[in-house]
Amino acid sequence: MTARIIDGNALSAKLRGELAAKAAELTAKGTQPCLAVILVGGDPASAVYVRNKVTGCEKAGIKSLKFEYAQDTAPADVLGKIAELNADPSVHGILVQLPLPKHFDEKAVLEAISVEKDVDGFHAENVGRLSQGQEAFIPCTPNGVMEMLKSIETPLRGAEAVVIGRSNIVGKPMAMLLTAAGATVTVCHSGTRDLNFHTRRADILVAAIGKPKFVTGDMVRPGAVVIDVGINRLPDGKLCGDVDFDSAKDVAGAITPVPGGVGPMTITMLLANTVESASRAARKA
Image 1 (spheres, rainbow, N blue to C red):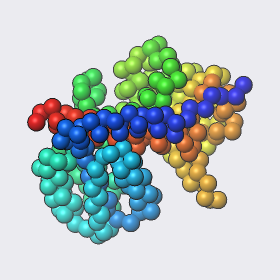
Image 2: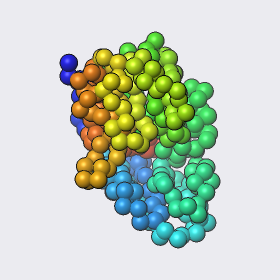
Image 3: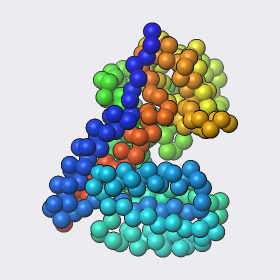
């Protein structure tokens, strides 16, 4: 048995085509979707992520603004820029690339972003709305995973879902989305006893722990859908996920690759949130 590959690049291309059409329609009516990105420090990985987001915007007809700050920039300067962008009606989304330098209060920076422009879905109010099933901007990676499950018509109601990882960015919102879709969800983490017991019960297994090739084939229930959120760089420079793809693909029913799986969908959902924010602004105008 060889798993079906869930192609994030192909799904992303399809969705971005639809988003480009929506962005063009909004622009024609006088509201061009606009995303502002703030990058602090010279972290190479962060710079690559920001570049990919800016490129994605350009291809989708979304205006992008990029503000770069040195590693030793005072937090007040970044907070001032966020306040300026909050007040600018032509800006529909604000993204602060994480991680921030250690002298920043990350929570304070994220909470400074207007809820209406929090297209990353990290603001506490958006998280609260999501937990209560209200309209909210959904964190991009979990939202992308849900789109991938939808694309292969994965039955969610009544399914056993296991999420490995409990981060605010992926694990927790992923569990909320799966729960809302009717799945029975178990969240595993570093303190979980007998992790294999849980993973082998999963119809849907989401790995988001940041450990290369941590989930092996013998941890996967035959026929399960395996979603690999991780992206890790090995000593030889190659990328891999949190799942040992070679062993898991022979057991799983469907699986996401790394690269080319969840990664492209994360950026696509960011673009989708930005277009949605612009659409809301246009309706209010």
